[in-house]
Length: 447
Image 1 (tube, rainbow, N blue to C red):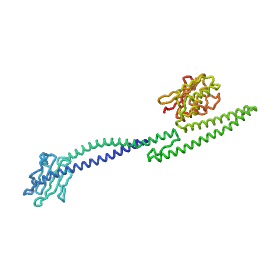
Image 2: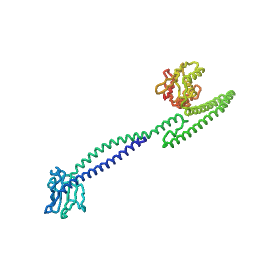
Image 3: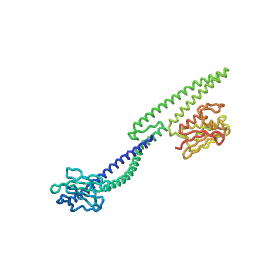
Image 4: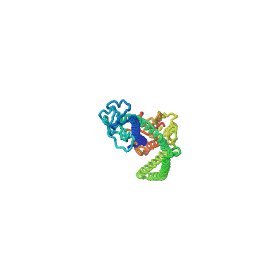
């Protein structure tokens, strides 16, 4: 079953045009054949009138044609043109009939010319015209004139073949015109597709009904209403998540104070259990806030841009002040004109999570680099640490998944960075670095 609307319209138009042209071929060949028969009948009647003009009856009542029609076919046996006159006293015929007779005349009540197609004396079919006359003394005479119908059949076949070729070319031309019409008719849907793509990248936009044909206006209104409802639902969900996360911060701080009090009172085991519970709750809160930030990035302005070099230098200056970062060498190889399709806060958060993770496992070096290609923008953060095996890279991007349980953290940094990158139309992948450690590669299409 065809799912493409364009193919359906083209196929329907081609079939409808073909059916119409087939009907036209039958109708035109029928009309052409009727015209040929009428012209042939008129020609035979004219020759028959010449025959009647020289027709007389001898004393015995036999017909005598003093001035027969002049046609060389009448002088040859089986010449293709024949005449015959019947009267009560006998019959007269053309030389072309030789020893044959034309079919007996049909009963007629009038004296008009009648035509019919019958089996000929030498041919499968002949066209015959005949008329009943009354000569002197009211003696009845029947005049018949016949011609081979093969000429008419050949003319009809030649006309049908020529017409079939012409109508075939006409079908191709009309199908091409229908294809152009379908393409022109579906062009508003292409504009609608572009508008929907802009709406997907910027949910705050709405489809302009005035810029599209009135036939699709109800669809546009429905899409705008759906976008409004979706935006309101997302905003409510984001606010509730943020409110929930912020609302839990104060109780968690109180629980952390109680843990410290319990530890000071000598309850180490109970304090450790309480700290693990608090850590799990904090991880859930940070994950919810990360989701809210990623949702805000998706719903944010699509024209947000942030200079990469400034954000990278700012992140490095902060990590260099940590105990681990002070022992490392940080390299920033980012052209000053490269900007990321994200806000400054989102860019700092992405680079901060990736650089902090690299600094945690690096031995001596961490490098942040960027390069622009004709079709993409590539940003990398890599280190010279132990790196990850291929089977570990997919797990490292899972939210809350930690491959190293020895240090602090909740396993959210890489997952949050991936969410923010994907929210801005990019991809984040983990690979083996040339430095020996882990390479976090971010790619955005250049558009």
